[in-house]
Length: 386
Image (cartoon, rainbow, N blue to C red; front, top):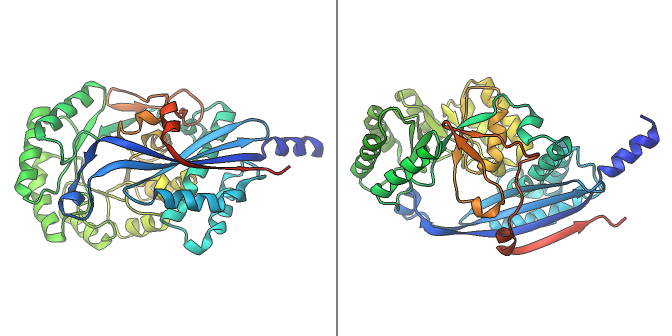
């Protein structure tokens, strides 16, 4: 390739436009987990999303998103707007370079939490664009180890839901081809948790993979006592039994119980996960790509998870995490199935035989619906000047 041809290619790959949109997704029913029952949070009635849409001079485009529950949506949008000009005019293929440029553009607010969550939407959009240009799904572009990933449903098992409805929801999920069921625990009276779990296990049978999630609301003594009581249910894991940052407590619990311990969804950067892994605080690592800075950062972490021979089960955002779990080189991972995001997109993911399957559509395989556009509460456009 001549220098002139190189220049033309670089010009074609140049980012000429970036649109950021703050979109609020209303939930049909207020959602309650153990954090609500302990009085630490109010029921969740909506989810705030930050969408990024990137366009190159050649007309290629990509879409990505981050999100926040209960608080932080406007902050993510504001921070993304501050640093977004840093990518205009840059080569869209240089995703790692652009992540570093963005994080330095907002360096005064650090490299974890809201600051990197704002960057995640742009990072994911760049990966979507790159995969579309290659005519591949994001999972295939990275290098898939499997075409389908084990999947379990969470959205049907929240604490506000009567146990009869939880069971009906679980049976419907299994009939739809989903492989496992997770229910929430953390009732003020722990006996209620055991009663609900017993009812679910009896209804579904011994062979259905079953998980529970305490959403960080037990203390160490309660977690150990209940963890021992839960051993008889043959759970795939006990999720977030303790505060997300209690690495020592999680490590002790993991050592004391046969049931695997899962945690990590609330950690807000790769470094926080590394400290948790080094402390042997989890058997199942549950990173959230939008919360740790996007796909670029997730890939760094997944290598560390594989190196330590731990299991991987990304949190929420199955539209992104399906691709990343498919590309995980370690043990067969799990992806969390939520139907909450369905109204945002025109496409759906396929589930059958207990697994969620990579779409054959290029990129992430999703386009924003008209309804999502109608739920936009703020937007900003950044364009090249020449």
